[in-house]
Amino acid sequence: MKPHHATSTETRSDPVARRAPAKRTTANTAAILKALTQEATAVGLDGIAASSIARRAGLTTGAIYSRFENNDEMLIALWEVNIRERFSQHIAETIEYIIGQDEGGISPELISRIERPPAVLGLGAEFLVVAQRNEVVGEVVVPQFSKWLRDAGLNKNATPIECAGAALGASIAIGSILRSFITSSNPNMGLVLRGLRNAYKGARPTTSSLSVISLPQIAANTGNEVRDALINATSEVMSRTGFTNATISRIARKSGITSGSIYNVYVDKEELMNDAVSNLLKSTQTQNLTAKQDASSEHHPNFGLTESFQFGLLTERRTWLRFRQECTIATRHHRTTHREMRKVVTDLDKRMIAAFPEINPDIINLLSAGEQAIGYGYSTLFAFSDQLSRCDFNAIMLQIAKQNKLG
Image (cartoon, rainbow, N blue to C red; front, side, top):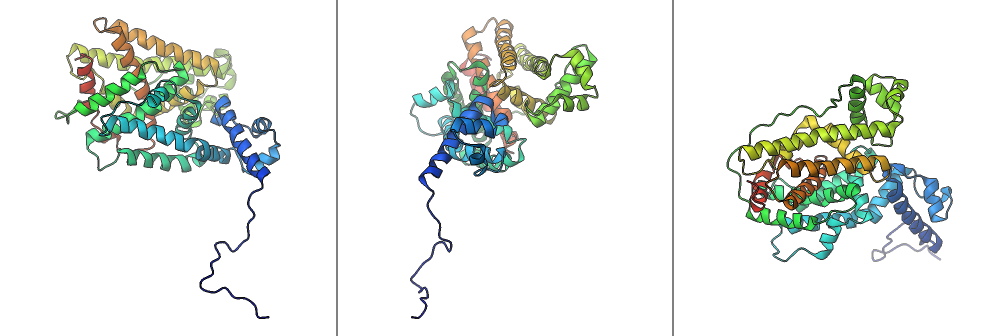
């Protein structure tokens, strides 16, 4: 019998015969991904451990490592399978609501996600922060999220107002999630979202140029040189490594102060972190509040709202902004840090109301909450878009001030 040769009409899609995954293998993989989601939600992306995931899944660590080479590969699987689609849909829907042509109202589902973000969106926002310092995660997340922003309207072909609308949509989508880590929920954030849409629809290109802003670098000023050095070193180290990997040894080397001397000032790393949170956040809050008071006294029609976006563009503030991001995601898993961040946010609301007694406190509370959410989200975008300097935020902020009678 002659050997059979494949004819031109025969196709062979795969030269290697492959067996379909066994049902048990498929079930085990699903169990691992479910346990991985639970673990990441409970301890954060930096804190996942194969042993804990195995216990949650009812499997051995060998079963984990037979599928994933290391923790970074587990994070990639978590992003790709359980996070990416829902997170991208949320970002796209929020941006579309602000800049889209559909005149329909905001969906109750979008309001619910903005005001009480589910855990899966929390992980999505945390991925954006981690991707900026984790090379493996960044290789996947950075190009994907950057493309989402371009596709949603934050691109070189859009007008400056269109860019600003897309950036604001992405900012409030991400920032409302990050803010909820601190406040648990975002009451009435749906009203802020509606206000942004109305302001975008009424915005007209800004014709006058904004004054150049120069600000001192955010730095500790406690009156104690050792304490200041430690706080500033903590900010820089944590902005590069995250909370978990910002060890006392690294902070000591950066500050030029011995580890033993650090423990003469602080009981532990968390107390040092909390001191840094309190001092540096209050410093930047004072700058933002002062900008509004100056704008109000000088009758600027944007009420100083545009200055926050200008502040964010200053390169000397990037370390501080990254530090704030890391502090925000740390609040999910560190009780004392959460308490400190919550205290700072509450204090800002009180200072805003005291600074502008002539304005309805309900308006101030909405304004403060909206600025916080947008600020947290906006500072996240720098790693994913080079279009932010083109955005005409002032055109939209003028409308926000006008809508709320702030000018």
